[in-house]
Amino acid sequence: MTAAAEDEARDRARRLGLQSGLTVQEMGYDDDVDQALRAGIESVIGSELVDEDYDDVVDVVVMWWRDDDGDLADGLLDAIGPLTDHGVVWLMTPKPGRSGHIEAEDIADAAPTAGLQQTSTISAGSHWQGTRLVAPRAKR
Image (cartoon, rainbow, N blue to C red):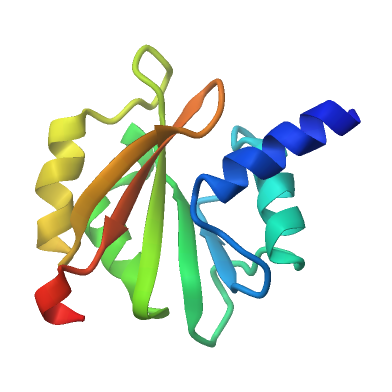
């Protein structure tokens, strides 16, 4: 990766609100994930992403999810299990027009079922968008 591409990847990771020292768990990894974003996240937090088998609490979950990955609410329930009290789930879904895209309404329906609320959506790369999900303030 070029220096400019590395800088751009770190900038995208920072837009996720990440900083050095956070523990970030990755769920739903497959060949289609945004490798540059992953590298940017690892650069910003100063360590590697932990996988789904990690058995301690995490600050952030980056969850790659596609339309054929199953029930989104169930996936989100799995994602919130290891989160700290003020943790964040970044749901990464293919952008509209891409294979595996998930409609915004489906995310809006699944999040409350898992005890989460949507706060923002960003472009996480050329193929992926990120939806920030948190526990409602009353539950924190």
